[in-house]
Image 1 (cartoon, rainbow, N blue to C red):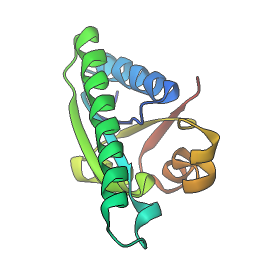
Image 2: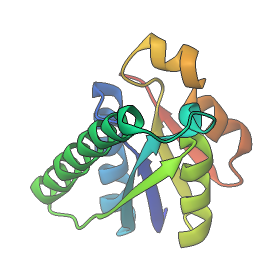
Image 3: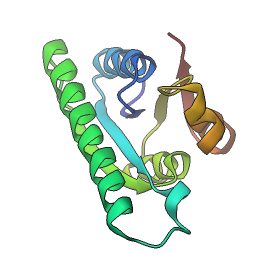
Length: 142
């Protein structure tokens, strides 16, 4: 049984399915559940900070807060506590860093994000996590 579980969320239906699977795993093992939303700033690292970037970042951060709020609600409905994290950077790297920082023994990710364009722009986060994770990783399809 898994004791510390990280569920990566992005507000998509697939990440919602991944969160629900992570909730099930946490309940089964009486484990600690963490949800992480990463504001993907890797695409913008070479762009000078200006008002446009700040607006985009603000929108992404707002979207993240909404996704984390929804995750807290889903966990509450299932009768389990959840610890939420908002990070910024490259999503795959940040998910792996959080898992390492908290000593997680399972990462749960959705098979794809909100759109195929996301996959083209930033690569497959789930593929990155599976490839570089040192712990068990569960990929949920929806």
